[in-house]
Image (cartoon, rainbow, N blue to C red; front, side, top):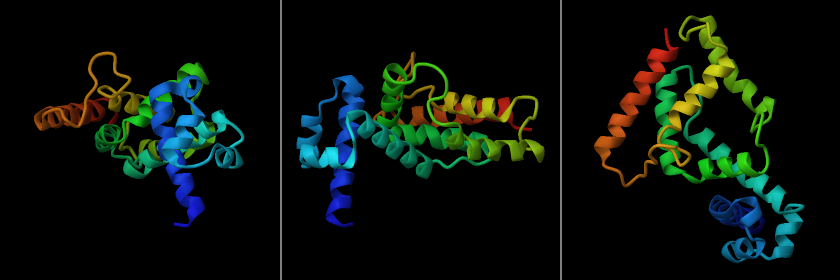
Length: 186
């Protein structure tokens, strides 16, 4: 990794921590600059402003989750892998929540083209009879993500942490898999 790539990586990591903690409005470029050991001028040479840096951070975090938990037609397994990814990378849920609160309060959070390939995986599984076909693939995709978020940082009931007893994580994983299997699989 060259120096420029290393600077961008530190900037995305520092930005993720700052935006996750404070949102776009509350985040301070000075703190991001200091934490990343990157000058403010360098930040603005990479990104036009704080909002563009936030967009880059959110995209980076989403790509990390997609690498950790790629969508497959095995929706119960996918829900469990998302649960684990949210435990390992809790900043994504906080960032997405801030994006929802401050930037995109209604409609899709991500562009339709980002979702097309994922929805097509489910649609193909519907065509082959693995996944129920009476619910649109796009709705199944949203609901599986919603199930996986049950104990994530945006939960209204309980937010799980890696420090929770392993027995609790096993129970939640089994519950997620059963719910996704019973709701969506054939």
